[in-house]
Image (cartoon, rainbow, N blue to C red):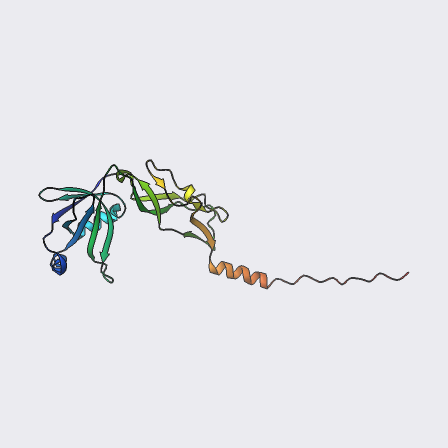
Length: 210
């Protein structure tokens, strides 16, 4: 797993003045956590986007500050414009690389379920899974093999792949993936049941008197 790195510069502008930075394609960020006091930085918006897409929304990012300074951080909060989704601000949590962290990591399905058929769909009940790991062991995402998935056998937290240094903290029986019939298939089955002929009622025959 290659390291994620992001260049940054010390930031002098604060408050409403940060609008000037955004017009220049820069994003104001604050580093807090394992630092003596919060650090105001600015980063290139395009570089931050690339870092996030490369797994920076879960993995540790090495922030290199121009003129000296290095922070190992987790991206804790990202603010965007409601419509254009342009980056507005980000909070970076500086971590101690020797202390385990609790983070949420994205889940990705891999393969085609054995139980997949016409009228059946794959459902993903959770977008993320919560883990505990040292910063260097945090994966960008977790790939889950769903080939053995059937209608009767969902995939739970207990079925997730074992990753060195990673502990799943969600309940082992929590369902992550399952298969369900589509609404159309359920409607067709219900219609078939309604249209089935009613069973014939046999009248009890009175025995003849002797």
